[in-house]
Image (cartoon, rainbow, N blue to C red; front, side, top):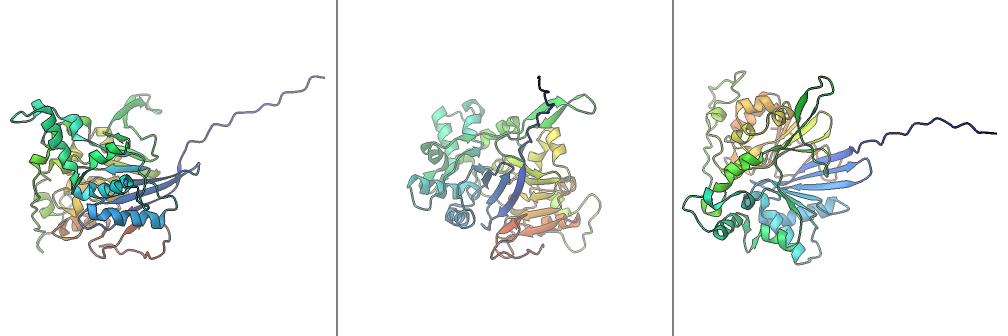
Length: 368
């Protein structure tokens, strides 16, 4: 007797997805340090540290990670740009790894756009030797007796440049070839929004230690007579010059989208010019976002009315120390004008937890 074969269909494997996540903004004064933590549908957890404040903040970040995370490993460290208030804490963390201290926390890999890889002697005025140029660029990452790049190399931690890269594919509805932002494969939900390789190479020749200058920011805000309009949320904001620091404009801009409709935009210290130089398809991806990491600690030199109206965030987080350093009230007011809820560390010097549920010692934050 010949048996009957049973018909069956192979189940398609389900795509890997994020099932839980949270974002933390750590209180590091006029500096930046964020944690993105997520769990995927296979039970894998990822901890991403976005900037690490100043050198003195490194130990506090280590203590925080060890206190709140059962597996204290940094899967990805992102250095948005070469300013000490963003990379300094990483130097402390790496020094502890190098010295094999008991509380050291491993770092698996770095994302860091290194200007050394993108500048040539012929692009520099008063032409200098290749090694001299490389050393002057490397000194941007000096912190005390150490250098971030040297530590990463000596510990053999993988390091990658990251730039916005469109991909081209066929639209399922129209059948036309369209450009879309390329999503990161190794870290779910992450998409590099800016900057492009071409724009970074334009900035790189001026990213050297001998070009490093201090910041001088105008703290003037709107007067009482100013009335917002549909296109001008703040006259003081729109009249301010865009950020003149090539370091800040070189910031790595990326989006974290853990679930549909929840777009979290991290801008480092980028300004209006940096956003103007991202690909068009990336620009479309960040229209009407959910959450914004306000660039450069709330300075009025990094956003304007047009940018705020385009991004139109529902929530905005500002890592800042106090009014005027570098926080401007007109930045807060402009964001509030579109109905955005704004939170800043300059009020209570407290950490903020987004989409994090209950945590001992944490209370509901009050927006500005």
